[in-house]
Amino acid sequence: MQFETWLLFFLTAVGLSFTPGPNGLLALTHGAMHGGRRTLFTITGGVLGFVVIIALCMFGIGALVKSSVLWLTLLKWVGGAYLVWLGIKLWRSPPMAAAQARSEAAVNVWALFRQGFLSAVTNPKGLLFFSALLPQFLDPQRSLMLQFAVVAATYAVIEFATECLFASAASRIRPWLQRAGRQFNRACGGMFIAIGAILPIRS
Image 1: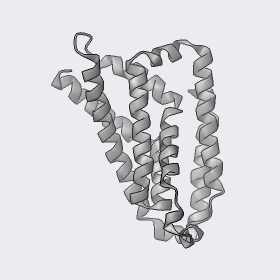
Image 2: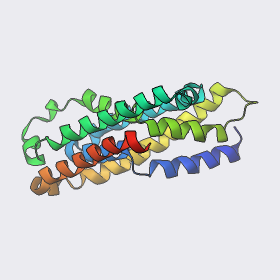
Image 3: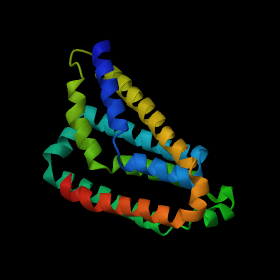
C-alpha cells in the first residue's frame, strides 16, 4: 500500500470513527456509567470486533454475505435483536446513584468487553461498508496479509482513540447523572432499541 493510499484511508477512517454508531454510543454510555478506566474493556472489545469484520471483508466473507440474501437478512436481524437487548438492559439499569452504591468490583469488565465486541461484529452495516470500502484501497499486486495488517492496525488505533475520547467526555458528566441517571439510561436505552429496530429494515 502506497503512502498516499494509506493517508487517504487514514482520513476516511477518522471520518468513519466520528460518525455516530452503536459502538460510539456504547462507549459514551459505559463511560458515563462505569468511568473511563473500565470502559477501556468495552472499547477494546469493539476494536477487536472491527478487526474481525475487516478480516472477513478482506478475505472474501463480506462478498459472500453481500451476495447472499439469506445470510445478509439473518445477520441484519441478529444484529438488530442484540442492539434491542442492549437497549432494554440499559433502560432497566439503576440510576447512577444506585449503581455507585454497589462495589466497583461488582462491575464485570469481561461483560463490558463482550458487549463491545458483539456490538461491532453483529452490525451488518459495518460488514457492508467495509466490503465496499476496502477494495478501493487494496493493491492486488501486493501482499494481502501485509495490507490487512496495515489497514486493521490503522483503523484499530483510530477507533480506539475516538471511543476513548467519547468515554472520557462522558465520564465527566457522572455528577450530573446523580440527579438524572435514570433519564440518561432510558434515553440511551431508547436509542439502542430504535437503532436495533430500524437496522434490519433499512440496512
